[in-house]
Structures are given as C-alpha cells and as structure tokens.
Length: 358
Image (cartoon, rainbow, N blue to C red; front, side, top):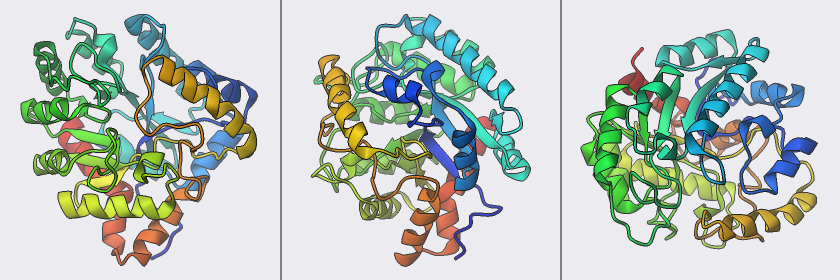
C-alpha cells in the first residue's frame, strides 16, 4: 500500500490543531485548561496539518472543565473558532455535513469539526442543543471524567447512568442530528445513552479495557453495543493503551485490532487526542507536565493512569507522519488497503453520513 494518503479521507475523530512549541501554547499547557484563544494556529501548524494528509479534525471547543461559566464560555469559544476559520479560509473549512468532508479532501482544505467534550454548557436547558447545532457543532460528548447534570464520567464513583435530563439531551441531539459522543463516560452512562439514542452513537477517542483495565478504556460490551447500532469507535494515541503508561505505536495497533475483532472493520477509526505538530523539546515539556498533572488531579478532572512520568501521547507515533506510519504498521499487521482506508477515515465518513446526512 502507498502511504502518501493522496486522495484518501483521513479523519481524526478527536484531535488538536495547535503548535505546542509556540510560547502561548506552551504556557497554556501547564495550566488546568487550554482554551481556543490560547491555541497557536500559525504557519507551521497549518503546513504540518496539510503535510500529514489529514482531511478533517474534530477539535474540542467550549466548556470542558475549569472556572468558566459553561454556557457563556462556550459561546465565546464558538466565536473564536469562527474567526480562526475566517482568518485561514484558504486552509481551513468548517465541517457541517458528510459532504463537507469529501469537499475538504477535494479542495485540499483541513476540515474543522466543532465538538464539545462536556455537555455542561447545556446546563438544565436542553433547548440549547438547537443553538449549538445552529452554530455548526457536530459532536457533543455527554460527560468529561467527572459527573455532570446528564450522567457520570468514567471517574465518577457512583456509575449512576444517564439522568432524566440526560435522556432529554440525547433526544435533542438526535433531533438536531448532532453526534452523541460517549468518550469519557462512565460505563452505565455509556450503555444507557447508546440504548436511548435513536441514531448511531460514537466513542470518538478511547482504548479497549479488555487489554488495559483503566476507566478511560471501554469494555467489550460498550464497544459491541455502539457498533451493533451502526456507531463509530475511535482509538486514541494515549498512555492508557499500556498498563505502564508508556504506550507505543504497537499498542495503538493492538487496540485497533481488538476493536476490529469486537466491532467489525466498518466501525473502528482513530481519535488521537493529540496534535499533529510534534513537541520539539520533550525534556522541557516533561518539566511542565508534572504541574499540569497536579493541577488536573487537584481539580478532580484527571483519569486513572495520568501520571507525571508518562507523556499524554504515543512518543513514536506523532508529528506529520503519524497517519502514514500507522498505515504502514497496519499493513504489516496484514490489513488490506481497503480496511486501512476505513480505519483512517472512511468509517467516520460513513458514520457522519448516518448522523449528519449529506
């Protein structure tokens, strides 16, 4: 198989568009939350994204955690991303439909999917889903690691499942054709939301708990249910893929292979949870990482497996060649060109057609 990715669709179901080496981004990464106006989308960011072959990225915006008013902060973040795309209109395009993904590939643009990693901004007003959908939000993750008003995150001790308000929010997400993302959710919340949804749901960035028993990874029951309803599962490039915390590219391949075995080859993709532009000075980053992990832990927002001695990415699967390298490793695993193309982006594209339409 050719690894130039030319003409293919590569979708990162959860990623970051940023130059982490820039002063503003490096400073922000040591804090509790990095907001969209702290991201550095400069010439290198854009050149690296183009060079990587990526077609579209689900970027996190809006309230995830921290001392922000959730709804107001989320509206500001939407304004920020609208401005970013206007400023870089020759390079970026806002993805609202599956057809937009194909058009981004045709025009050599980087498609930006607006996504939330927490439904907290809905607060107790599910009608806000309509507002977010009108603004072009395509993905709403129900919870982050902790509990919120719609359900429990994977680190919430109660594992209480989807709340009555959560059921109403899922119904509104279906009504407005917004993806229901169950990444970070607790097991009961995940299962109950998947069963409640009238449309296929997704777990855009996760690993397989059968391989590594950590809360951020999903059980086979969760994976199988999502796939059985026509949904999508993205495997991340995160330390949770290895019990030691030092995940390698081979671990990504193992988790993809397990997910394919459980879900079938039509329902598995990637959601790296990282940047395309690589961090240049890993030693300096390691010094900042301890502070970042400590802040997340103190805020109750961290997940089991987050440690100051492990990078929050796969060190040998990063930078502009990460997707080509993954394709090479999957080919070496014996995967066909067609299966690799599905995993790199075609499966997300098919899922997007089912939820967003054309």
